[in-house]
Amino acid sequence: MANGLPDPPRGLLTADAARSLVDSVDAFLFDCDGVIWKGDKLIEGVPEAMELLRKLGKKLVFVTNNSRKSRRQYSKKFKSLGLEVTEEEIFTSSFAAAMFLKLNHFPPEKKVYVVGEDGILEELKLAGFECLGGPEDGNKNIKLEADFYFEHDISVGAVVVGLDQYFNYYKMQYARICISENPGCLFIATNRDPTGHMTSAQEWPGAGTMVAAVSCSVQKEPIVVGKPSSFLMDFLLKSFNLETSRMCMVGDRLDTDILFGQNTGCKTLLVLSGCTALPELLDASNKIHPDLYTNSVYDLVGLLQK
Image 1 (spheres, rainbow, N blue to C red):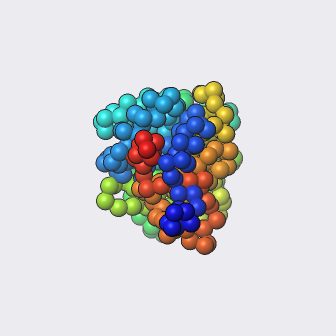
Image 2 (image 1 turned 60 degrees about the vertical axis):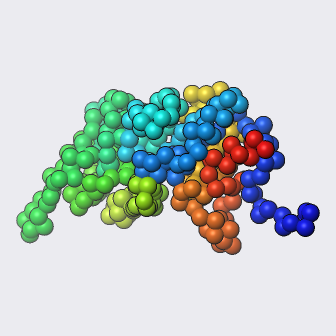
């Protein structure tokens, strides 16, 4: 206790901590949903925080588990919200899925079945892969009759599962049968987030719910390429001449963003503007602790100007 006032909670971002953090890192890695925006609504103070950090010479990178959009589509979203962010500064789990297949020399004659949306399809096609599924399979139905036989493409060599608002029984069966019956078929998950801020009003089921359904049906765990897996970091390090010890991961989820930062050797800053609330962070059962936490990225502006 100093000056008769209680000490701030452990890890709370203060003016001194903010200055020390900025001095110790060269790049800030930002999650998007719950940190930069909620749905299509920009979180207050984000433009000011980004402008200040850029003026201080910091590299800004955006690392999102949301696979609904490609890097190109996300760049357009940033622009629509008044933020200038290039495709090269964006790393998505849909991009990670495509790069995983490319790095592992996925056979060109094989196809990829997608339980997900346009972001996955676009990144896979840009990487040169032929895809099936996606939103168009959201309108397909089946009839569980006695003699009904479900046809599928035996050339499918990988199934990629991500966030899918068109998820249905047809897609689940297509994914299940490919993974179970096509020899060597890979089961890849963009991420396992249970929920996410798909709108500004509330949280919605995340990709983890679709992944869990497919995983249960095949009794097999997927290869996860998004956070907290370190796979995305490999591409980031190849793109920028940076060291992880000189980076700070800023996110709103303990089990993905903060764990991703810890797994890859980054400093970590939790913001309470998204999924994680203060009681959850401070709960005795919580085992994932960020280096620092604060209400939102806008706090950096006020604290650095003190």
